[in-house]
Length: 165
Image (cartoon, rainbow, N blue to C red):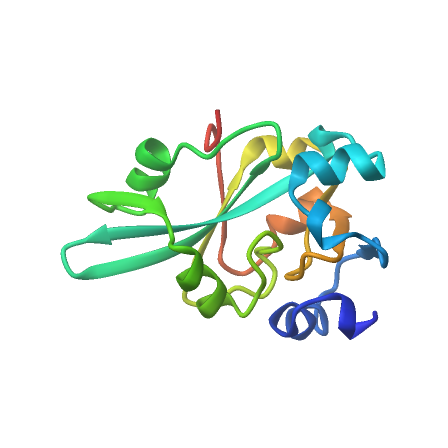
């Protein structure tokens, strides 16, 4: 693995990763890192691409962070199922500065691999129906391709049916 192609927290997590993966796109234009542009330019089927969004769930003064993984063709049900799963009164996308600062990853490249160990990782069950998914590497200039089922084996992972709509 070329450590320059993944964010430091991702490289650290991949060092002990027992699953197969490959870094995709040593030449990805960071301006094309957003899913739709990436898929179109690099010929990746959007149904084989997964997005990871950072959610902040709040209950009183306590904030719980979650990395939610959904297929690129769907959206996380933030105000419904995600909020209830986190037992939060309010859930929303984490502010960009928080998501970047807390993960050590670039906005638009965040991946569940290497998020802080106290975070919850919620994975839509539909993601696991794919053989391989392309997901962020922690940087905008590359992606990771890995067996979808490997995401469910991350330590903090919970698979949730209907997480996305």
